Image (cartoon, rainbow, N blue to C red; front, side):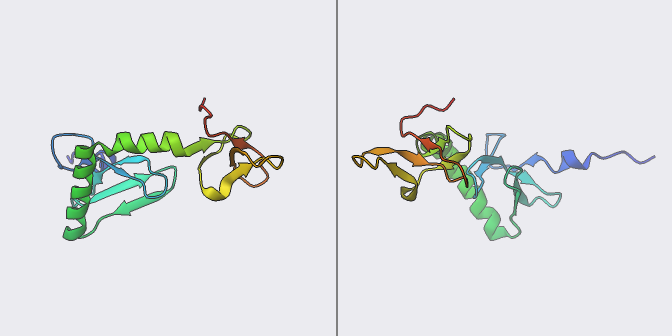
Length: 137
């Protein structure tokens, strides 16, 4: 009789990149830390479900570079720095709740005296303005 194999479990093996069992790589679209997984052929990949992104590394050069990036990220604690940047430069619209990165073209100023008001929400039809010092709830 043949043993049953859970293929989903087989594809979620951590890449052997050091002592930390959880290795993260940032999503190139949203910046969220993604678990580095291995295919059955021991090639690394990451999946970002919210963005619909799948990133597979196919050759030895790419695998070496990915291993170095993940290792550097862990040693330099870039995840704390990325979270700090996100807290500072990503705002949430008070009207629609959409999160967005601030850019110079989103700056809203008062038409009366030209003072800085905040950052306009990029969502079409939304008139929300997120203040610089706004606390996220």
